[in-house]
Length: 129
Picture (cartoon, rainbow, N blue to C red):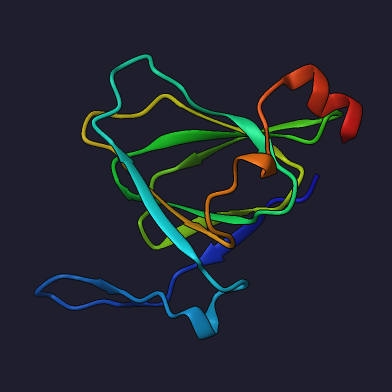
């Protein structure tokens, strides 16, 4: 399984840095944006795969681990730089864990919410992967 990093164009300035996300420059058109915050210590998020949807996951603040599985291999990635995200392709199981205090996880999704696109059972995912 290949990990696709996405470096977010940033303008560094002594007054504060500015990161820019433009649909025309993303690897897919973003149709939905959401973020996770105030995740209690020890809690995990995700725990599913998508059939068609792609996501760009960005740590806006703090850090967390992204666990990606393709049914054969597993990769654990520490995300802790708001100028660098990871693209999760379709049919990859994802879990998000070990949120630091104050962590904010931003997600840009290629599709609107569609429950039928989710695979929420690990055993079912392994059969389809």
